[in-house]
Amino acid sequence: MTATQGQLARFIVVGTGSAAVHLGIVAMLVRLAGWVPLVANLAGWMVAFWVSFIGHYGWTFRGTVLTKRASPQRFVLLSASGFLLNEGLYAMTLRWTAQRFDVLLAFVLVVTAVATFVASRLWAFRASTPLR
Image (cartoon, rainbow, N blue to C red; front, side, top):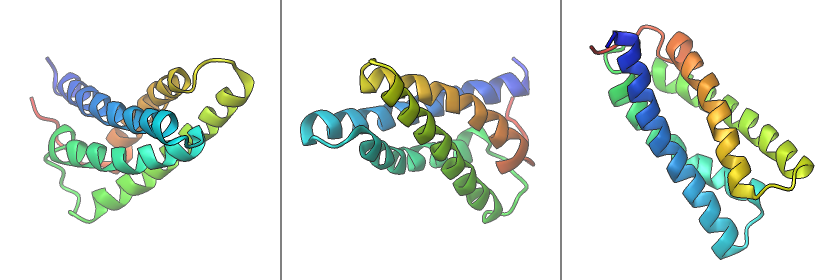
């Protein structure tokens, strides 16, 4: 396995865990607390952000030569931008399709994950040295 493949595999593991937390919180808030899906999506992202950051900073992109301050700042900006993309796509799919809210959110999370990996690798953790 190449270093990039290993990094991608770790990204998928962390991202899957983060997405599961995100989706679980949204489903719980909508089904049990009666929240509107788009509002629940914000709450889900806020919790999943920490799962994602801790996993990516400490494992996926470990070995960064950026300062301990630069990568977190970049990741916050990247994650917030990803959330805006997520929320926009989610709002459109909720409005224009008849699919269940959780199915739509799962689709949107996969789409934004691809963009997030590329941006994380090329910008947020740019100076990372992938593990082998």
